[in-house]
Length: 284
Length: 295
Image 1 (tube, each protein chain N blue to C red):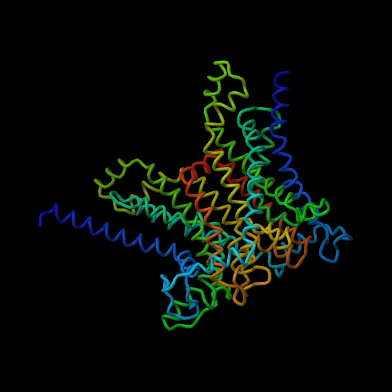
Image 2: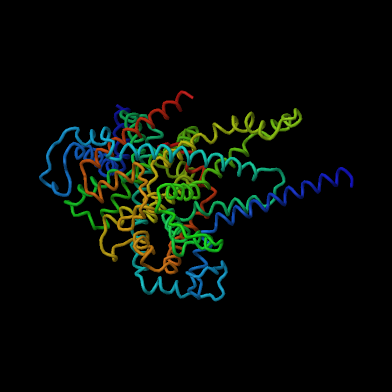
């Protein structure tokens, strides 16, 4: 064997080992999900037997059917969509203009408000949950969708403002100045120049808000009573199988059904995700 | 005059956003501060009275209250999780960036999956699918090996480790992506001369890679530091759900505050704990932002 051949063989072996390592890591990562997929599709309810296998001998969609027929999942989906879409719409509508002026204008009171917002951003909303409850309750906003929308938009408005302000900061002012010299008005500049440039950040912000509402279970279960008001997150929370009650295969199926839309959205915007989040530079 | 007009329009444009934040974030915090100096609880829902700093004293100086223990546990939790995440993400990203490694894109996509699945769903799947003492996968494997079933979440130490594993599983993809991006930004010519000089992998990592990527990963590390310190879902969902406690007592500060508000209904005390946590976070955040400005 020549030196060259030997080197090539060694490199091939290293590549093989690397592939084996990453296959093992990927498998280990996916185990909880693969297990849920397998259990949800398994026709033999042999959960308690020890001869479990990842690929079931007989398949069934019965558990998925149960999710849609025995539980009011479509109602929950409707509630979630209503909450999520209104929250995203309101949040963007209030945050985009605010983020823009905080990035571009130098007005009185700007710095102290920004500093305050950054401090408030580190405050986890679960800590003031009781105060929010007590404040909203006399206004009739507990156990109401409007109340939840208010809470969600208020919580995410801060993130929206800071995150998009950070992104606006990275867009050079010169582009706007050039447009102004060409005779464009402020409104035209914002609509035709700035917003198209800020699209990745607006998209990521919208997706973050959507994911937040989709996944929020704590306020949704504390502030809403009655299964007909539940969001998907609250509904799934109520479905979970414990040591003594509930059906694990149905829960597994429901979990996958609930996750799928988010999975699709996530991978659709994935390439913007890290830049859209860290360019804002909010820590807290 | 022009300045005044601009100030007016700026405030007008940001008013809806700021009003919402005022209503849902600022006002509840002020109200929490107010509740924290009263004895409001389930028996004193309306007729509560002013008790001064008593709740703060109970939290900070009565050791049995459990707050200091929760604070200490949270610090350990944050340190352990950050260390594991940084080391694992660094090693995995370095391996992914080995030259001529085909298939890294596919592996990266698969390793992203935990980030894409809703966090609470993953935690509940781990809880039932992996840790459940009857049909959890871990116990099925234990049985297969002829060992006894373990109640993973019932004991403090093992529950803490289970929470760490789940948190790692949830958080590693983000850190891995950041590390991967940072490693790709390092100038490859540094390595070539280091290899010519006979530097080992470890020497290259310590003297070239880590100093080079530190600035790039800094912001992401800080974000993760805060989210780890403020972690609620993992610990709450795995061990402390109302009506389904597993027996382990591993409160972090946030679950501790939550329990005192919504389980034992000690609103005044819980609000005092919340304000202390907020103060810690504010100090922390101020220090970080000041350093960032200087650096």
